[in-house]
Length: 224
Image (tube, one colour):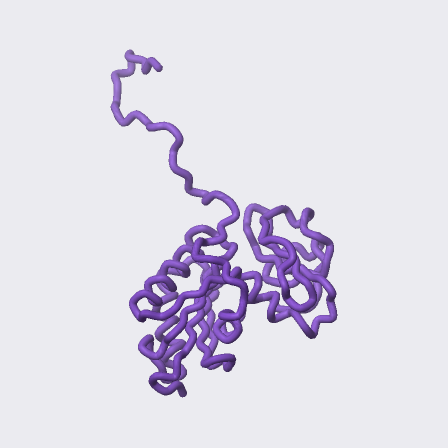
């Protein structure tokens, strides 16, 4: 159980699933996940409170917030980042943003025996978000979004690996982001800033030209 004033780290990531982790220093205290990717708004804040409550803590015990900046789909990613910003502001906690792929790489690095590897996640539209890493988890390239055919032919882990097992060099390794690891080790990962890593424009785009809302008689044509 957490004790008041112990300085907990709260981690949030919504680049794929809705995930929340809590750590005290490098010790993981809790890690929770909701796999419904269509309910980020409804699930995230209740999951934060449940995860903290599971270790006997509240937001008042949080001194640091770490958030995954993606890459990921526009809406879900934005929900997690804005929530982290609000929670950090209300709590007066420090906020640290990281590339979400770096967390999966960290889980695979070290014991894999691969001098280089790739982390891939689902980008929809028959594409993947990916980055290339050294064996120690240092990011060497990316993040990028592309067809699986354009991903370097290196051992590949992450939630996108099994979706394209016939087009990627898939190996055993993490398939999800561990928010507990994000809480415990995220503060030491490279700072990725505060802006979401969308990598491409959102599906919903602002119209390039105003549309007429006037209804004209059938015998009148619109001249431009």
